[in-house]
Image 1 (cartoon, rainbow, N blue to C red):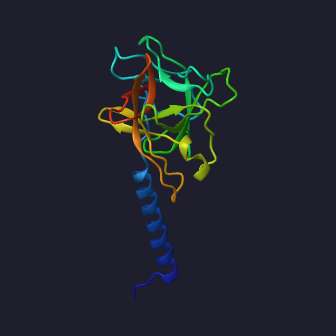
Image 2 (spheres, rainbow, N blue to C red; image 1 turned 135 degrees about the vertical axis):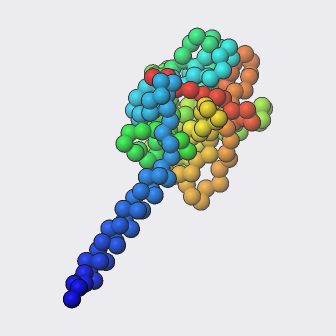
Amino acid sequence: MALKAPYPLVFCFLLFAFSAKLRSVAADAAPSPVLDITGNKLQTGVDYYILPVIRGRGGGLTLASTSNKTSCPLDVVQEQNEVSNGLPLKFSPVNVTKGVVRVSTDLNIKFSATTICVQSTVWKLGKFDEQTGQWFVTSGGVEGNPGRQTTSNWFKIEKFGDDYKLVFCPTVCNFCKVICGDVGIFFQDGKRRLALSDVPFRAMFKK
């Protein structure tokens, strides 16, 4: 007479198999890691330079005053000289997975620099500039604390062909209405200011 497996044992086995399948699906669904110019994964808390993929069109990113009236907070701009790497930055994702920066993930971007301004060096999207009709990227943002009060401080890195682009489209607040757009370069008074644009800034990351 054949022995039958006890019902609880069969149930436990099926539950274990189902759980393992869910973990596998979740792992497959995780966004891809962002890679630097050497092919290594971008790490949280590590300094990197954001550089243009297309050479001859300016250098890395830095902070500068773009107004004749006030000097603070400083705005995010691109170096005029293509051989300049600009200032180093750190990335802080809203959800850190093994210390890796991933595409399509809300994150804070912060310059690792000391300035004359009391405001932080965390990126944020400034208020709409009626004079130029632009949404500029500036500093003075808040690091962490995702929610309605901090939506302007969250950016994303997305794939753009074989390269990457910076995007503003925060998802840290499910019920908030936000503007979405690629981050590009806006030329103003000889400065290359970062702003929402139909032409994305093709970016690469150097440690």
